[in-house]
Length: 280
Image 1: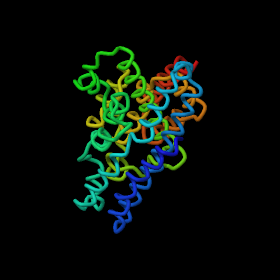
Image 2: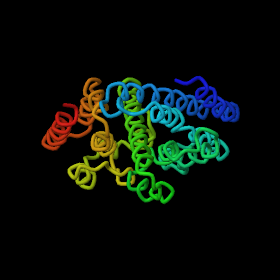
Image 3: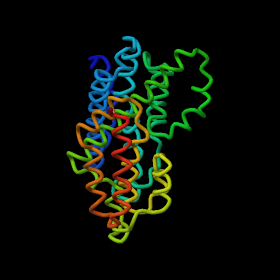
Image 4: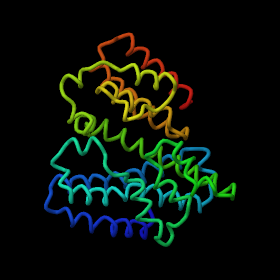
């Protein structure tokens, strides 16, 4: 981790941390996002060390990617400030229905920062949490003419997306985050125990990441996390997931809520098939 990058990151973090000091939940949120950002950088570095494609990239590419990894969620601090101002941390529903696009906030915070005003960084900040279609449709990035810059921009975005997902898998497994996140907290017992929906299953069977807006049950939420297997980009990411047992963990939690054994086997078989191909 470059010392100057961490110093700048702390400079971006501290004002918002001080701003929300009177709200324990908000302070906990920004602290968690600080830790997450460091973890995404560390996981991203591990992916780069192990992946054949990333190991062949230039030092300049890797330096740009490390900036994107560390600063991808810097907009979360601004988001917390907005939510603090609106007294939204006392309302679980406000956490479930996101009002702010933290990726765009990250982009806005860093686009004029010296050393960060590079499309290869900014694309990752802005679109790491979006469907890839939104990135492809963004004229600022789709209009880049230099073929190598465009390749590197896309490769860094995919690298950040992978590291971000693996960091989320980690906290889901080791910090029981699935039972603490707003998706779980805001659901009634009826919704928590509702079956997998046809819409979520259709997206999963099509090999697509399940859209958050289509989730109707906790089973759907778990299947959505499992569907991230279709949105990882580097072989090393799949290898790490297999070694850490992230998908096995999610399947085990899904089995607690999904009482349709046939569907459970169907989902598990698809996950095991995808992992065997992509991590081999």
